[in-house]
Length: 220
Image 1 (cartoon, helix red, strand yellow):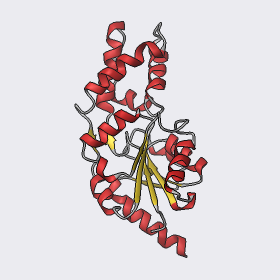
Image 2 (cartoon, helix red, strand yellow):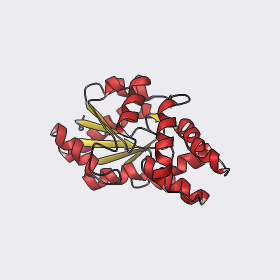
Image 3 (spheres, one colour):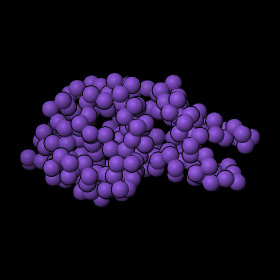
Image 4 (spheres, one colour):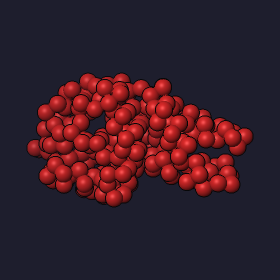
């Protein structure tokens, strides 16, 4: 295989956490008597971290508060209900097992402790050599800095790494860091927004074969 390192996004890529995030958002909205968010709206809003999610919620509901007023309540509730409804996407475990010979990392804009606890409690933590959440690197995706941090930690050159994610934040971060990008179409963003990715896949189970074919193409 051409790649020595595969970097994965978390929410919308490895796990579907949108029901639990929705419930946590609606928990902080309840005292204001405004319209709750749906799963679809939650999926549109997430991706830039919890603080930015609160800012978007405040903007969408015209709330007379700051993100810092809502964030502690959101994080506390979400932390207590982290895996009430969160599930691992089909094909993820098979793909990770098939890539057991490659170093793997998670780079997510989710808080570090929430990311680690999610991976541990859904049985995926064992597959990853490193988890980089929103507090580890000096900036969040779409900045390339989290990706560059992982490359430096592992001593891997950009042309030997690939990022796999469901959003433009993942693709842009990968491209800006000089690595290849695979986008999944089953996550939180429609496929038409992911056209800048090098490859689109419809199931994580397709990833090992896609990476293997990439190696074949690179030798031609």
